Length: 86
Image (cartoon, rainbow, N blue to C red; front, side, top):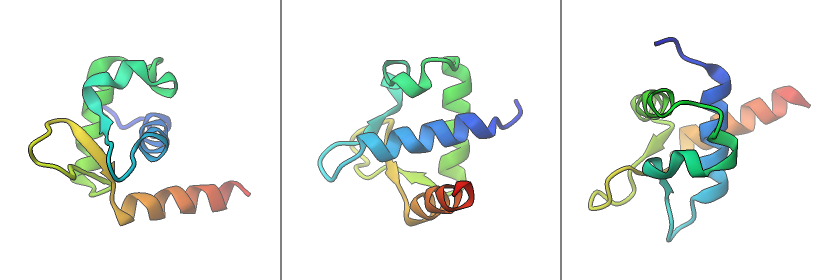
């Protein structure tokens, strides 16, 4: 599967919007997040795995499967694409 940069951005922006200290982005609920509705489940899961491999997202609590938050690298990436759009 090819990497879809729009999908990558949409996932990261969704994680940023959803994740807090006490709550994580849940990949098993991907289709319930409005920004991600347009993607297939396979596409979302593939890109989530890609983002984890790139160290843009991580699992903050190993006891909760498929829960993610942004890493410092993920935050930096989002800041850089916001800056480049201005």
